[in-house]
Length: 166
Image (cartoon, rainbow, N blue to C red):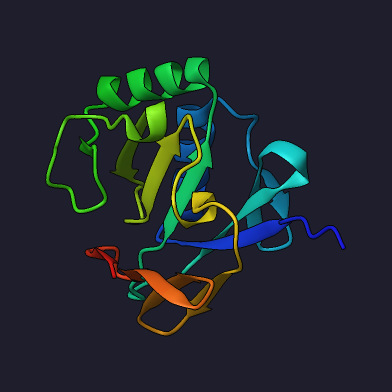
């Protein structure tokens, strides 16, 4: 069975500002109205559907990682710096103003206007590159755990402040 990711809802403090942030920073076509969402189209028919949160509602930050080409990384990273956006080489924000070179590629973390943690990478990395074996993901209210062949390998908190290798 082929399963393909189609869309996700991105809660926003200002859906128009958020959608514009993504389209301008990533060099994408303008967002389109879709019901009460503003949809930003990515590759393969995937969309980020921006939803306006009611005033006074806190947006719970999520993490969104985007695989980009080397040229796209350069263009996006130039825009990040031109805008003076805070950015980090790591998810714990301990290396500000830097990029990483994990798995031979380039990557950087930054936040959108609603506080979501964004990441652009040129080479996939993470639990899905663990090699052969049965990989299991366990998602809970407070985090995500990953195992391979029954051995727990990673635990990441949903607040994006910690990633632990077990």
